[in-house]
Image 1: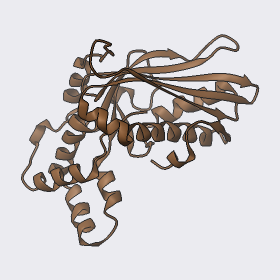
Image 2 (image 1 turned 45 degrees about the horizontal axis):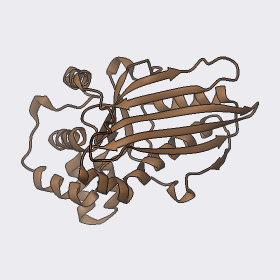
Image 3 (image 1 turned 45 degrees about the vertical axis):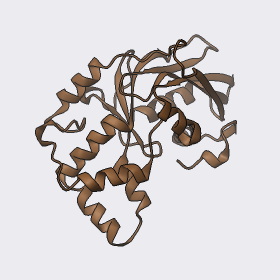
Length: 262
């Protein structure tokens, strides 16, 4: 679903250097906090849509992948929507943050959300044992540490989106579509579109169309050297979880099997 700047070493050093002395106080922008939802929600509402711009030096690109799932298009589309709105699910280390009133509810046209790369979980996965793991585990549990990490995630390792197409009741034989466009604060402009096409009574094709233009030369380098692979891993995770939810089999796909583990 969402590209992320997952340079563990760099972010690990940033956190280690700052955890001991940084306090966010009452301004910590954690969407799940019952005391501070409005600040994050208000900031989300002010983010502008990032449109691709052919006059810029960075090339506009298009990445398309298909995944066949052994169930009807209506069943696949419903399962995909349910998986995407489930607040307890993760796609690799990506979670979807929504406004408190929308959590767990069906998506709506022009709804805004954040795709958050969970930095603390990424670092914990890298540090599996020993005194360093214990130090990180204890540190990450503190309120100030969580606040600081969320600030980094909000500023550096998140995508922000707005639903731009939501076609979940097509005519007989039609396609189901869910699409979102990227908002300011994301490292890319463009859109992600998911299309479920009927292939027969018990088979459908999920197509992901990723139109993107990096916002900086540094992100061009990162995305070309592994970021796009992470994005495709997330897409495969979303499709896999949708298939598992309905007990369906994943069929042919052009996403390499090596991408199966985000």
